[in-house]
Image (cartoon, rainbow, N blue to C red; front, side, top):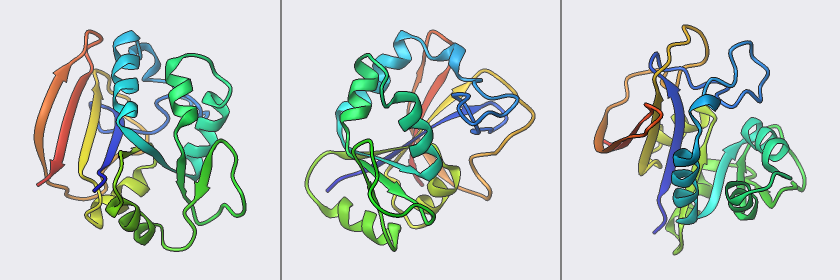
Length: 183
Protein backbone atom coordinates (compact mmCIF):
# COMPACT_ATOMS: atom_id res chain seq x y z
CA UNK A 1 0.00 0.00 0.00
CA UNK A 2 1.29 3.43 -0.94
CA UNK A 3 1.70 6.31 1.50
CA UNK A 4 0.89 9.94 0.89
CA UNK A 5 3.77 12.07 2.09
CA UNK A 6 2.94 15.77 2.28
CA UNK A 7 5.77 18.27 2.46
CA UNK A 8 5.44 21.95 3.30
CA UNK A 9 7.89 24.81 3.64
CA UNK A 10 6.79 26.95 6.57
CA UNK A 11 7.92 30.02 8.49
CA UNK A 12 8.02 30.17 12.29
CA UNK A 13 4.67 31.99 12.27
CA UNK A 14 3.03 29.22 10.20
CA UNK A 15 3.05 30.87 6.76
CA UNK A 16 3.32 28.50 3.79
CA UNK A 17 2.34 30.86 0.98
CA UNK A 18 4.74 31.50 -1.93
CA UNK A 19 7.99 30.06 -0.53
CA UNK A 20 9.50 29.86 -4.01
CA UNK A 21 8.39 33.30 -5.14
CA UNK A 22 6.39 31.97 -8.10
CA UNK A 23 3.05 33.52 -7.04
CA UNK A 24 4.25 37.09 -7.25
CA UNK A 25 3.44 38.11 -3.68
CA UNK A 26 5.45 40.98 -2.20
CA UNK A 27 7.05 38.60 0.34
CA UNK A 28 7.39 35.58 -1.99
CA UNK A 29 10.62 33.65 -2.36
CA UNK A 30 11.29 33.60 1.36
CA UNK A 31 12.55 29.98 1.28
CA UNK A 32 15.05 30.48 -1.56
CA UNK A 33 18.00 31.59 0.65
CA UNK A 34 17.65 28.36 2.64
CA UNK A 35 17.45 25.95 -0.31
CA UNK A 36 21.10 24.88 -0.57
CA UNK A 37 22.81 21.66 -1.58
CA UNK A 38 21.67 19.82 1.55
CA UNK A 39 18.02 20.68 0.90
CA UNK A 40 18.33 19.68 -2.75
CA UNK A 41 19.89 16.33 -1.80
CA UNK A 42 17.16 15.59 0.76
CA UNK A 43 14.43 16.54 -1.73
CA UNK A 44 15.88 14.26 -4.41
CA UNK A 45 16.19 11.39 -1.92
CA UNK A 46 12.55 11.82 -0.88
CA UNK A 47 11.31 12.02 -4.48
CA UNK A 48 13.31 8.87 -5.34
CA UNK A 49 10.96 6.80 -3.14
CA UNK A 50 7.85 8.08 -4.90
CA UNK A 51 5.91 6.95 -7.96
CA UNK A 52 3.68 10.04 -8.09
CA UNK A 53 3.78 13.77 -7.40
CA UNK A 54 0.44 15.12 -6.13
CA UNK A 55 -0.49 18.77 -6.35
CA UNK A 56 -3.33 21.20 -6.87
CA UNK A 57 -3.84 23.37 -9.94
CA UNK A 58 -1.75 26.36 -8.81
CA UNK A 59 1.22 24.22 -7.70
CA UNK A 60 0.99 22.25 -10.94
CA UNK A 61 1.02 25.42 -13.05
CA UNK A 62 3.82 27.08 -11.04
CA UNK A 63 6.01 23.98 -10.94
CA UNK A 64 5.50 23.20 -14.62
CA UNK A 65 6.61 26.75 -15.47
CA UNK A 66 9.53 26.80 -13.03
CA UNK A 67 10.85 23.24 -13.31
CA UNK A 68 9.46 21.99 -16.64
CA UNK A 69 12.58 22.89 -18.61
CA UNK A 70 15.09 23.36 -15.79
CA UNK A 71 18.29 21.34 -15.63
CA UNK A 72 19.77 19.33 -12.80
CA UNK A 73 18.99 16.21 -10.78
CA UNK A 74 16.09 17.74 -8.84
CA UNK A 75 14.40 19.10 -11.96
CA UNK A 76 15.03 15.83 -13.81
CA UNK A 77 13.43 13.74 -11.05
CA UNK A 78 10.50 16.10 -10.67
CA UNK A 79 9.93 16.14 -14.42
CA UNK A 80 10.07 12.32 -14.69
CA UNK A 81 7.49 11.68 -11.95
CA UNK A 82 3.90 11.24 -13.11
CA UNK A 83 1.83 14.09 -11.65
CA UNK A 84 -1.62 13.72 -10.14
CA UNK A 85 -3.44 17.05 -10.22
CA UNK A 86 -6.43 17.68 -7.95
CA UNK A 87 -8.46 20.51 -9.46
CA UNK A 88 -12.08 21.46 -9.94
CA UNK A 89 -11.22 24.13 -12.52
CA UNK A 90 -8.85 22.36 -14.94
CA UNK A 91 -10.26 20.29 -17.79
CA UNK A 92 -8.89 18.13 -20.57
CA UNK A 93 -5.46 16.71 -21.16
CA UNK A 94 -2.57 18.12 -19.12
CA UNK A 95 1.09 18.54 -20.04
CA UNK A 96 4.26 17.89 -17.97
CA UNK A 97 3.51 14.19 -17.48
CA UNK A 98 0.34 15.06 -15.51
CA UNK A 99 -3.08 13.48 -15.10
CA UNK A 100 -6.12 15.30 -13.81
CA UNK A 101 -7.92 13.58 -10.94
CA UNK A 102 -11.39 14.09 -12.37
CA UNK A 103 -14.48 13.89 -10.22
CA UNK A 104 -13.91 12.97 -6.58
CA UNK A 105 -10.16 13.44 -6.05
CA UNK A 106 -10.35 12.00 -2.52
CA UNK A 107 -11.94 8.76 -3.78
CA UNK A 108 -9.38 8.55 -6.59
CA UNK A 109 -6.50 8.98 -4.14
CA UNK A 110 -7.94 6.35 -1.80
CA UNK A 111 -7.91 3.92 -4.72
CA UNK A 112 -4.37 4.83 -5.83
CA UNK A 113 -3.13 4.42 -2.23
CA UNK A 114 -4.39 0.82 -2.24
CA UNK A 115 -2.16 -0.08 -5.18
CA UNK A 116 1.30 -1.57 -4.80
CA UNK A 117 4.20 0.70 -5.58
CA UNK A 118 6.10 3.73 -4.40
CA UNK A 119 4.70 6.55 -2.36
CA UNK A 120 2.87 9.72 -3.42
CA UNK A 121 4.65 13.02 -2.66
CA UNK A 122 2.52 16.13 -2.24
CA UNK A 123 3.82 19.74 -2.25
CA UNK A 124 2.02 23.02 -1.81
CA UNK A 125 -1.70 23.78 -1.66
CA UNK A 126 -2.68 24.15 2.00
CA UNK A 127 -6.37 23.61 1.11
CA UNK A 128 -5.60 20.25 -0.53
CA UNK A 129 -3.40 19.24 2.40
CA UNK A 130 -6.12 20.14 4.90
CA UNK A 131 -8.63 18.08 2.90
CA UNK A 132 -6.27 15.10 2.78
CA UNK A 133 -5.72 15.34 6.56
CA UNK A 134 -9.47 15.64 7.17
CA UNK A 135 -10.07 12.44 5.18
CA UNK A 136 -7.24 10.53 6.87
CA UNK A 137 -5.14 10.21 3.71
CA UNK A 138 -1.86 11.78 4.90
CA UNK A 139 0.50 9.16 6.27
CA UNK A 140 3.45 11.48 6.84
CA UNK A 141 3.70 15.26 7.04
CA UNK A 142 7.12 16.80 6.62
CA UNK A 143 7.35 20.44 7.66
CA UNK A 144 10.53 22.27 6.78
CA UNK A 145 10.43 25.01 9.41
CA UNK A 146 12.40 28.08 8.33
CA UNK A 147 13.98 30.47 10.85
CA UNK A 148 11.94 33.39 9.60
CA UNK A 149 8.81 35.31 10.61
CA UNK A 150 6.81 36.99 7.85
CA UNK A 151 3.80 38.29 9.75
CA UNK A 152 1.58 37.86 6.68
CA UNK A 153 0.48 35.17 4.27
CA UNK A 154 -1.59 32.00 4.15
CA UNK A 155 -1.20 29.65 7.08
CA UNK A 156 -0.92 25.88 6.75
CA UNK A 157 -3.52 24.96 9.35
CA UNK A 158 -6.96 26.55 9.67
CA UNK A 159 -8.11 24.52 12.66
CA UNK A 160 -6.85 22.29 15.43
CA UNK A 161 -4.77 19.43 14.03
CA UNK A 162 -3.02 16.93 16.28
CA UNK A 163 0.17 15.31 15.02
CA UNK A 164 2.86 13.04 16.43
CA UNK A 165 6.52 13.98 15.87
CA UNK A 166 8.42 10.93 14.57
CA UNK A 167 11.68 12.46 13.28
CA UNK A 168 13.57 15.72 13.36
CA UNK A 169 16.68 16.98 11.68
CA UNK A 170 18.42 20.35 11.70
CA UNK A 171 19.93 21.46 8.40
CA UNK A 172 23.07 23.61 8.19
CA UNK A 173 20.86 26.47 6.99
CA UNK A 174 18.98 26.49 10.30
CA UNK A 175 15.88 24.88 8.78
CA UNK A 176 14.29 22.22 10.98
CA UNK A 177 12.89 19.21 9.15
CA UNK A 178 10.05 17.96 11.32
CA UNK A 179 8.34 14.75 10.29
CA UNK A 180 4.93 14.01 11.73
CA UNK A 181 2.31 11.30 11.50
CA UNK A 182 -1.37 11.81 12.32
CA UNK A 183 -1.96 11.47 16.07
